[in-house]
Structures are given as structure tokens and as C-alpha cells.
Image (cartoon, rainbow, N blue to C red; front, side, top):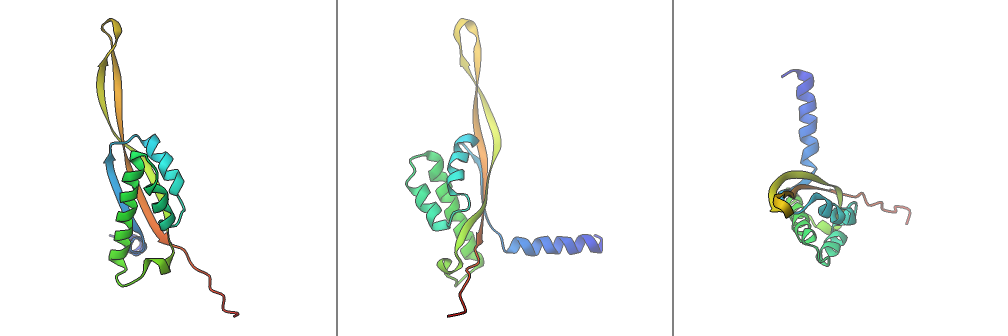
Length: 138
């Protein structure tokens, strides 16, 4: 590996140490339904996002709730002995990507068959902490 490549690889590695990521792969909910829930919590504080997801009746909200809890646990793993409330965690990025599609057949009139597509998705949550400005003039 060349020196320039090694330097950029080290920089990327250091940047990933400060990211707190959780992934949910092959979730059996359509990406469209999951994106409706994701749009509600994007750029929200973690506590607010958990409250929003907890009281939504959708199945996607329950799965997303667990995923945000997992991202918080990943943050706590890297920051032992630090309080979450002091760091003002928020959802920096949350992405929903399409995953595999199960194709099924449903009988239709006159000997035909209609295709049913059972969609699934991948969800990625990235947490970060907001900088809190402190007044030093007082």
C-alpha cells in the first residue's frame, strides 16, 4: 500500500471511531413504509425519537425503536462512564435501502397468475453529539 493510500485509510479509520452505527438488514417491511417512520425521526434528539417511535402503532416503528436503542448501546460501549444526557445525542443520518424481494404467485381469473412482490429493506442509523454552546460572559 502506498503512503498516500495508507494516510487516507488511517484518516477514515479514525473518523469511523467517532461514529456510532447500528444496522438492520433484511427487515421484512417495505422500504416505502419504513421511510415514513424514518422521516419522522431524522435529525431529532435521541430521547425525542424514542418517544415518537414508542407511541406509533406501525410495525416499522417498533423495529426502528429497537434499532435506535441498539445504536445508543453502541455509543455507550465506546464511551464508558459518560452520561448520554450530557452529550446531546441526535440521529445524524438514517438511511433506508431496498433489500431482497421475494416473488410469489397469486392465482388470477381465467388461468392467469399475478406476481406478488414481498419487499424488504436495510436500515442504517448513525448517531452523533451536538455541540452545546456555553455562555462564558456570565
